[in-house]
Image (tube, rainbow, N blue to C red; front, side, top):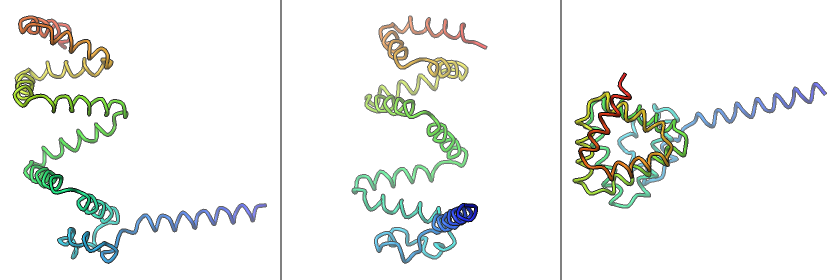
Length: 185
């Protein structure tokens, strides 16, 4: 009985060792398709120095590029150029925000996607007005709003949005002032 158990454990260990070896091997340059090699040509001389993870990431990226239509490729190029133009601090901020997004529960991520979609569908002038209003608010007011909204249910947010839309500018200002008095440190 002990021998059979030891053999099973040994077989399992050998299998895990071989699987970990597979997971750690990347993709050799020769394994890439001709189109992938053409896309990744600038990495050829460094390819063997890359980690297996990076090789696999680059291969997947090349595959996505191959599957894109010309309009998608153009948008991808524009996004890459914008990314390259950012400062290191801006890039770090974006990475942190993305990580926070990934850490959210799936339902909250979907809710944020829907909110962004609604915002993106607004006319440019309305989006700009909203952005300017948000930028002009004091930081403590923005923080208080974020905090309050994060504690609301989706239904409460819809009801609030509907009430807000029905208010006049003077009523909105008064509501903001009441809110800040209640939620000030």
